[in-house]
Image 1 (cartoon, rainbow, N blue to C red):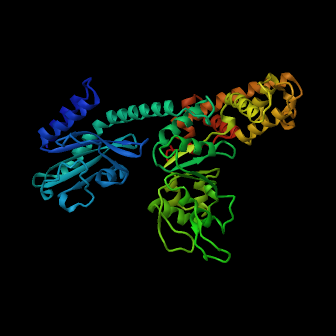
Image 2 (image 1 turned 135 degrees about the horizontal axis):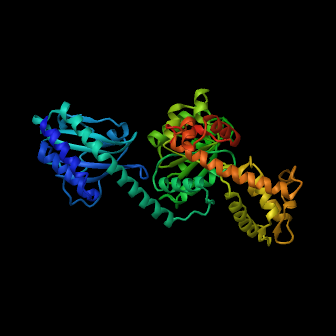
Length: 500
């Protein structure tokens, strides 16, 4: 036992040095070899943005490889450990089919002589990587060495976490510079976060679930993800699951064979086949019938589909993005949505904020629509006057961005002087707006509301949806926070630990 304590002390001393990540991690593996007899070692990082586990540091493994070593979640022993967050210890490698040996270091070795241990590296409540080693099977004491390596991984955790954040941020900046967004307009905190999430997930094949109220721009978000992905030159097909009758949805998604039903005079290719190598966007996924949910789950898990009335299995390579304005957790409790499908779709959730939470973005969006729509409609409209801006800021926008766009489009068509005045906006925006003083007051209220909403949302994120903790962060009472949440229509549940 003394050698393990001695090794832990030496590794802890390493972390007091002002050395770079690679040097500290490599020296850690060297100490594990010299002090405890472990022969080969790897430190891997769980890259959320790539949905892959990358082997970053190795010891005792050939370094002349032409390509990096990586695993998918659940793939091989390393993938299983990162996915489950639990260690795996194997007394002899020849009895373990999950061991992939991607490095090729054990190709010419007798695997019956080798034991293998892999433990997760956990920071907070998240698995950020894995530490794996192998050693001579005859001298392995797995009951002692597994907890020892878990202690070592705890020491590594903060440095691995920081390295992962650094790598992800570098890739994010490159993605944003490479593909500046034309569809995501706004400078509010919630929109900057949305742009960040899109950049993080776009260039992977991860399944995305987009949530948000009707009219917030879920379809534009899905389109932006596809445009920034490696599939951008392949098909992007959109299907509104709520607009297709229940008895036709399966044929629309999966196709049908000739004679599959009365009136089927020919073969129809389904949307999943048409979207092969591209992206399929299933809008209003909460409307999908239960019977179709079963078939969709199979496509997601097996990458295979069958046409209605057919027996041939068809392989499909399709990235799936879904969207809904419903709370699917509530639909699961009501028996309207399958829990296994929800967890398969909710790999990377993205919430599109309502317009009322975006504050001064309303002005940015209005100007954007004026510029874009005036060109499309061939009308010379240059600006929005101050009275119109007051009206736009004081309205609560239940129809969100879509409603704002429709208002601007109508005003452009009616404008004859190159300026959008307040009287050109719909009458319901002007209701009870009898004076300039009231417009100023309402505009000020809207700005205050926007500021308060931003503060509350930031506090809820830090408190993971806990209203009592959010109140402490804000220096107020839980009752005040609850009142503001209800007043501004903030969904605190989306910030809970299971959704972040």
